[in-house]
Image (tube, rainbow, N blue to C red; front, side, top):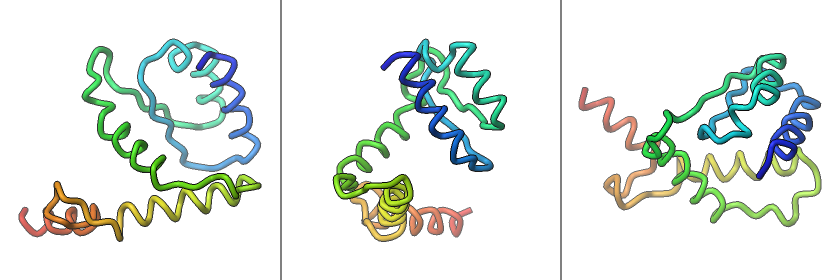
Amino acid sequence: MNLQLTNTALNKLFKEKRKGLMIHSDQGHHFTHTSYRNKLKENGITQSMSRKGTCIDNSPIECFFGHLKDLIDVKDCKTFEELEKEVTNKINYYNHRRPQLNINKMTPSEYRKHLELLV
């Protein structure tokens, strides 16, 4: 990954103009570079970063994306809309239909509701 790749990806994103976006990353050079940060700011995108030297900040999202990559099938996606639908469907599956052993065989949405009842 390099600065040209990250900035090219942002330029493609800006063509779609979605409101309320947030991009999370670590503090790699390409994500902290002025050109990248300015592009985000100019397009109203919030940047979220893990704290420097604390990889544990990023571990929940890395874990999630690892599972998402296992679930997702992009080979038949021909357009951005098809890709967006595939990602949305898999995220919904992960959050609402996929039981997880480490949270008492509940889905993440069931577990959140369970925790809310305990408070």
